Length: 316
Image 1 (cartoon, rainbow, N blue to C red):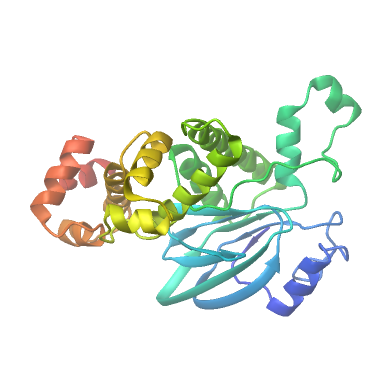
Image 2: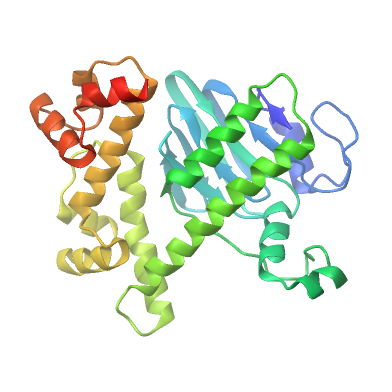
């Protein structure tokens, strides 16, 4: 179901702790089965504080504005260009504090929905005929808790779901088919993460995992606000690494330097702002961290083949 307002916090906290065993939705209607329902929160709010909620596999992102999501001691700022995943039965805190309403698009994907999908993709037809659904006693495919940039496939899948949410009516079949497109994109994203970790030039898997975790602290910081001015020493300090160790490891994971990575995020934001807003090119440049309009225009054309004005005309 799509919700336009956050449900009552006390009620939700109680239901989430019991994993919706009472089978009641936010309106008191009977759910089809026991367990977390699929809920997509498309709300507009300038302030909210929803602490320590136990959720299903969930994806946090925004249509406009920023929100903060915390899992354990890890807290990230989620924007229109990024997303953050929490896994089944993890506790999360969602905060919004903004001068103007933030439009959320947070997907809480129901009891074992993602687990069912990954189980189906990894199982043979004969196994699925005997055991068609994921069992709670099987291990499940966790995503690392890190802020990630939306790639083309994830953006497209989320945009289609958002379009569906704006229709006056939709069927569960339509929702399920749209979710499959998103799950395919997430599977591809997870494979890319695994490949990135494998590129770290270490033999011990535990060392690779720790290095990726530390580099992710820096990428969380970058993706929270790509427009901020930051140097290599700052990023290395966030990752608790020496400067050149950080640079070598970051480059092996992302196959690009931190500077080029940050520039790519700035240009991704610029493309979105040129397409989605009526801001002047000068305003877009400043919002994306370019102090000089001429530098922004020259850089934008170098990497896209178009001036900002021509790109806006092409995409509108």
